[in-house]
Image (cartoon, rainbow, N blue to C red; front, side):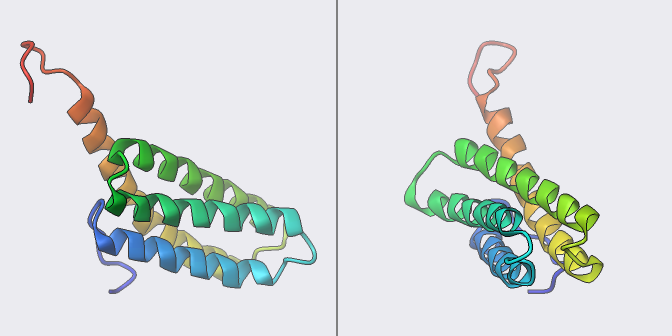
Amino acid sequence: MSGSAAVEAGGPACAERADDLAHLVYRITWKFMHSDPTLAQRMRAAAITLAACLRARDRGVAAGWLASQAAVALGELECCAHLGRRIGVLGETDRRRMDALREEVSQAVAREVGEAAAAAVPHPKGGGR
């Protein structure tokens, strides 16, 4: 699958791309594990949480709750990457590679959060959807 291909919300491709992102985060954070171990560990934890949330849907865990947890993990990863860039431990090339993959997964998660929220809103005429 190409980096620019759309990832279907909730599909196996989304979980696979989240796994790819976790792998990339591990490779990138290895470069600054000794100079800033806390930041590296936070980035790794966020990437693993994201991948775990997207994999858990296959086991019947509520999609809306998982999508919201995945959105939090994506936000943490984004904040950590921004900080890493600002303090000089994360190179621009690595940041761009990570951001492209993170954005791909983020769009799929955002679609799923929107779908779950829409499903939870009662119909204005009192009936179900």
